[in-house]
Image (cartoon, rainbow, N blue to C red; front, side, top):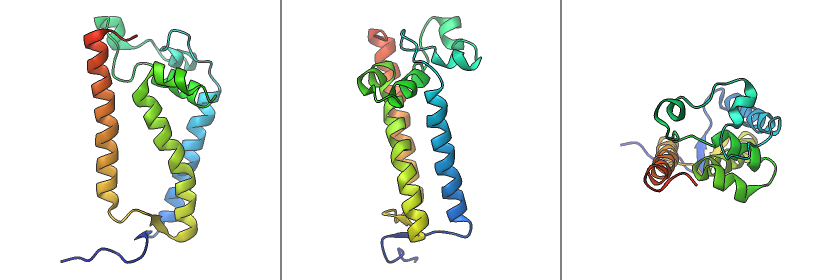
Length: 149
């Protein structure tokens, strides 16, 4: 039977510091990218400013997809317009919050050489992904039932 690691969090594996540094820089780049677009006033469609096509599900079926408004939400989030970010896509707002928290957390982990406050990383990952995925699906069900706005 394996024992839980002692101390506050699991020690980083070889290359873990580099992985966390890269991850935090990737997240920072994502937030920087969100500052480069203006939030679409419709609450969705901001991604088209990157040259991407309109949402396929909206075009073909006339309904929003679960991530509809996510780019708009991030564009509002980085500007501190949090009520607008939540209106655009509340689940994406939750994702943005998780991403924001991970940046300083990554650097604390790098400094400590441990996954700070994480004793079971696989469990933490599964719970985080399940929770965020559930938020996106639940929100989508509400949109399909009652309309998007």
